[in-house]
Length: 279
Image (tube, rainbow, N blue to C red):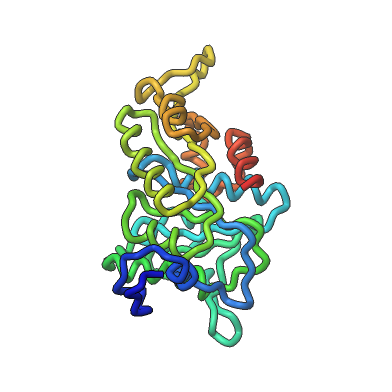
């Protein structure tokens, strides 16, 4: 402690034992009636790489392992999780006393909370400023009845703005998975996501590359539609593992568009599921 200490840490730049002891946690408390054991964030540095798809597939895979699974859709302005599971706003409800929102359950029991479940029409835009969006994410966490959840997957919006920062600071995130695509530009985008996670002291479980290749239906050859992948090089540079390389597969789009993602039974994310279990 400095000799000139006035005991007002907010006006002091010193790093001392008193400051460490008095640091305030930004974690948003979970409602006493809720229980969530592990929180895994699914992030990307840019949009359109399949982050929501990976979130959905991971939740489905973990649910099949008889784990109680949930998805918190933090992509408030671009929510797509309900579409993948065939959910709509008429399913949303509250507890008997009206104090908490009830997450919607998918066909196989995955609990989901998303902004699109609160809209009258799924095409209505959510025109909110950053702080309001961040507040909604906190409400989804603390004002929803999450019953005995083993694994919660948080589908975050792209980038390193308000919402990812809110999730990292407000939720007890046990680890993140970064979703990428094969383009060369990705190396810079991944680095941004990695560096943000490191600054926030959030463990990085690994990388998942989506749209990695297309398998020829005749010979089985893997075709690099978007150019040669750089994911292994990026992973080596960042010191994190590659957990999966997902193909361009028409049946995935068909199932997502039909709200039947739970019918997908490929094991492309087996290593990612293992990394989540070990987090």
